[in-house]
Length: 458
Ligand code: HEM
Image 1 (cartoon, rainbow, N blue to C red):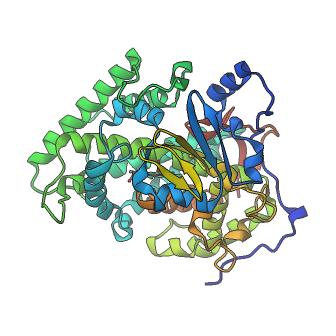
Image 2 (cartoon, rainbow, N blue to C red):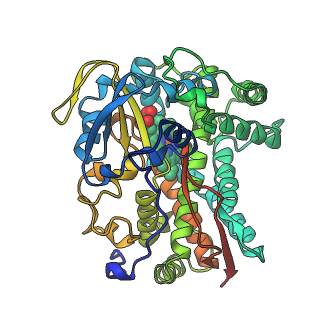
Image 3 (tube, rainbow, N blue to C red):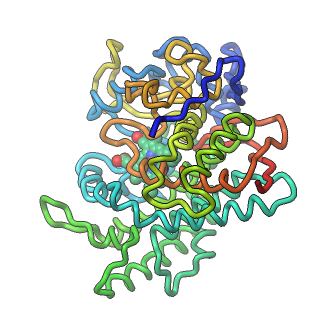
């Protein structure tokens, strides 16, 4: 099948909302306020024109990078010289323990080797029916609303339903509602940046959890521990992710995962996979709502590929334009717009010296809108992801990270997002509800006031 092309000139393209960078001469007080309110606005506008900048921050040198070679230098070429940022580790460790997202060295390597096979493409097919069912429920809910509806909320519920059911299909004795509330409370605990977080505490100093956070962690852990005990007693592990985690063995040592590893991994999959995918879908729907030509082509694709029925596993590869739209949404609004790393050895980034203890900020948001790297970078143009035109440098599109620690769930997320988007567009038309949309980084890149859109059945 040919990849669909919309063939439009830049003047016909939609220019979506963008982050307004802070002026370089604002007061220290204003800068600190912005760091807490929307840290992305503190990334200098000059990183859209150049690819490297360095300067001091709270006693450390910070290297800010927005070019593919610079990002590759940190994530791939000198991978061993860098660790995740102390702030991220301090925020996540109380909730995720030593799970793959925060682990380093041998612990990370062992988990990556053991978990990677669970995300192989052929293993994902088993999750497609539950993605389809969640997609239909989302379309029912959006189509039933007579008024503008906040899609970010609906997408959050939808991707939560998918990951929860992918983790535990069989939930005897499991209070879904209580666990969902506990997980939401834990995600809020991670998402709230406090003023004290701006102080460069060392990574071993735990970040204090709120009483609600501690109680939510207890509810989550107790529920998962009970499921683990129950499932370990069954001979036949289910085909869900929990079953896969119970069954995985290291190819070299034959060792499996401990109950604590599994519990922390389950929480990690929810933390890393649920909101990121919901945000990607929210921005995709915003872009489509504002681009009627693209929307009509997507509807035609959905109708041609899936007709009026449910998406089938062998149809997903044919949803090419749907995929291009999601890739373009991930370019303009990467759910993780900046990653932080700390150097644990002297190293270099494309000829710039880096000393042990320095920080690197990988500004994917700036890289993916860079004025020297992309044509009409601020415009929504799904054509740039056709087979012939897509960038050949893998480090141009960084939404899923890169190097050995790139996202484990990228296939899962792209499959899920394609199914949900195609299902919604096969049944509904979407239009914008108001003109003011402000992207704000609160761990992920969210629309500040939610994303109200208007849906009508076709
Ligand atoms: C659109 C959706 C998603 C986006 C944009 C996304 C983005 C990312 C990024 C940028 C990283 C690298 C973090 C770093 O290097 O510091 C990452 C890592 C990771 N992601 Fe995703 N992710 C998504 C969906 C998912 C899903 C659905 C899952 C699991 C079900 C998942 C599981 C993970 C895990 C386990 C890691 C850690 C990998 C490692 O450290 O070896 N992600 N993700």
